[in-house]
Image (cartoon, rainbow, N blue to C red; front, side, top):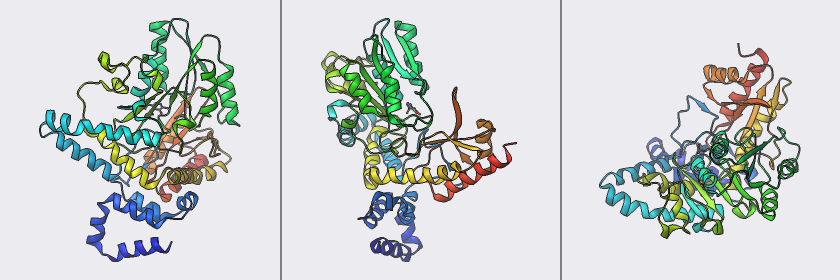
Length: 430
Ligand SMILES: Cc1ncc(COP(=O)(O)O)c(C=O)c1O
């Protein structure tokens, strides 16, 4: 504590110019804040506004808007964005040399570091442009015959469901979507429902690690273990999970895992990865075909033609920023921010929280409904009157506003949202 206070005091006393220069250095701010927080538990740091002020200042944001849609894609911290721009500048000197010869080979550093963070072998991890591409490689690359069944849920991501629907139309496979309660009472309820729907024709289970609609976390391991026992492949949609809350590949046990890195890792827009269990690499067809010599090589999934190296190389800087905070601290802060609005609004008679707030069930993402007021009108008013960005969720079985703060979100922003929702609940959105 003393160290942190001393640090802040010293920084403030250094005067305007020095402080401004210091602000340009997000990494140093992060390192200093981390030193000051040494010895504190993640829960203690989650409530330490001095620490998070340093993180907030590491971004170049527009604070005239309150961005509570970090589930879409996120701003990168300044250091990451600077790296992206730097690599773009380098590329543009003589791209065939600077981009292909100098920058592109360094993708291997990114692969090694991502694999370390995810807990798999680098030879099992392909770097993609987003979660859609990663998941579609698995969805479209698996050999399936007419009549084979893919089992998923009706709360999986639309594009991924559309991808399976294309295989229904093209290959004659069968797609079964189960429903599950929102919020569920227990994690077993989720695994039981999915596993109970398996039939002799089921060849693939596809489900979210954490859903984008309500932020429901799934019990991935028991589902994947049972599927594996029955010879069923598992495709896990981790678009929102990686770098959001702590886990490793060994906690999942899935065959294929796709994630975005422009969401919770705060990497540049246009980054993601695909994990493929090593023994399945050979038989999974790539979306963009590669030469025969690459048949067993995870890099066969990266044969997309000419593309910027800047985006994927700047992932390394995002990992460094992420490691500087630490996943335990980050998850604790995200839950702290989510609980701050959700527990307050949960008290309100006219407000329904669709997310189970138990840490085993959720983290940053929460979905909330003003009962009796159409969700699009709520979202419209949040923007028009308070400049709050949030996204409407309209599912056949429920609706609400999805709220996703991030590490740069301030308590004042969260409180403004909560107060706005209370007013809309009280007066309506007219
Ligand atoms: C659950 C889920 N899966 C997949 C995706 C696709 O991610 P991307 O747009 O990064 O490809 C999203 C995007 O929001 C998502 O929420």
